Length: 161
Image 1 (cartoon, helix red, strand yellow):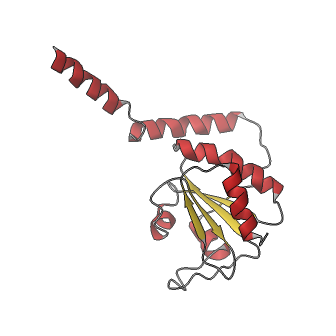
Image 2: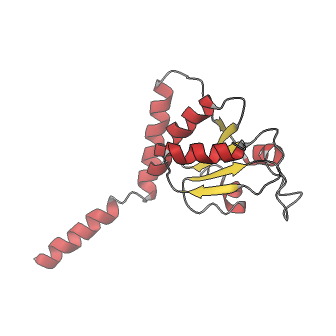
Image 3: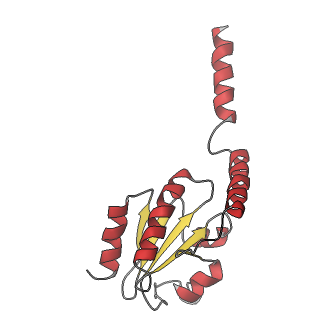
């Protein structure tokens, strides 16, 4: 009886796991529904595609051996997924900072489920991953959810402050 109870708990835990693809799909449906029902607000963090990355940040197809920044000003790139809890914690922080630093730093976000090729090329293995890029330097990379103070410190480094 005790073995059956333990096996039952293991099965329930397995089926309700956060990482299951069914939960990811259901969360995606919920996210879509909730975003459709809200009114459009100005977003300071812009969605970035594979081609945008090549055009605005680094054309690794033409120059894979060396990072050559193509942007006009520093940028912060949030690699996320809609089902990722820590990504959801970081998103409002980056949106707030994007509004605050509007015109000084470009803020982008890349949905790794939609841009799998870009995530693969850049070896994004954990979410959220945030890149801090500027001309003349290698991009800094942060993995995992961080607080606002951390992001401010990284942004100040980008601006040379």
